[in-house]
Length: 333
Image (cartoon, rainbow, N blue to C red):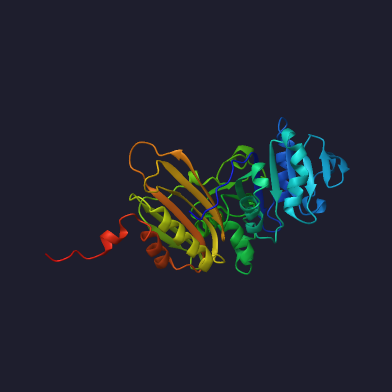
């Protein structure tokens, strides 16, 4: 059907992103010191970028820093894929992998790694993307830097930091602004830099089977940031060939405009759900659990910039099984 089918992955990966000064280092240090019975591998661009507490470091082994609680810190001076391969022999002793992106980096290329590298797909799966938002400075930063807006739009979960340093009404205004950029992510607050690890680790939010899309077809556009969230749904079966052609066209012509896409599709003649998700022009998909008894509703969300919502809606409609029958005028007797 034109969409790659991949194997089930194993070790959970969490991407933690956020602009410079948003508190990523503080959060990761608290994760490492707070989980006494779990071990993690942390991947960063350079050791210095992370600033792991000196008391945690006990030694180094090539690209790996050993930590006192049994966790590891892996330096990425080149390709992320190489770092993931370096960690493979240690995976049996690791409960999860945390990747910290640079404050100036877009998380999209990191996420794409887990959709494109078939070899590592056997060892890792992307669990969620957590973006930290600095309540003191995000408004000023986002007015001039599109990367900070991308980080918010791409997030599966948003965590407000330094909320105790700004008035309550400012936090409320920021929540509204973030909701316009990303209407699908939960927004949490890290109280004094603390947040339960259960809120950000092993949350399964990158799993397309957990998407929540209203039954009524609509689209949302934030004209200030240019981010659009286009939601599509239908209780009519989807023709698999038409769907594959339409998705491929969408990726070819609008791939650079896309940030995220994911959906659960009811294909004609298929008793199982077809679940897919994409990062820009990279898409993965597979049939998964059977549909439960009752109505089967196909749902899809497309997030990006400069998208033609009406054109996307027309393309979606063309995938419906009886679209041509319903769109053609009835013949006169």
